[in-house]
Amino acid sequence: VAWRLLRQIAEATIEAEELPFHFTVSIGVTCFTSTDASVEAVTKRADTALYLAKHAGRNRVAVRW
Image (cartoon, rainbow, N blue to C red; front, side, top):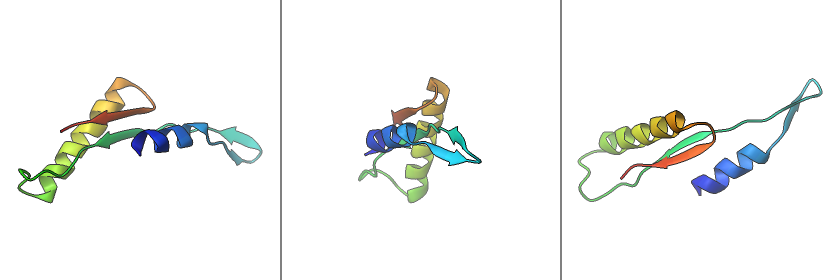
């Protein structure tokens, strides 16, 4: 799902004042597991994945388990 979203955003063109704009995204992905003690733990892991994607370059998906 993350890769499809990333691809659709990258392929989209938005026009403002007759100028085309293109966007890219960085997406961090994780899963909630039975060993997670809280939602905050999952959120922190997703945030870490997001920053891994950002540091790897534009238009990336990073997964952190």
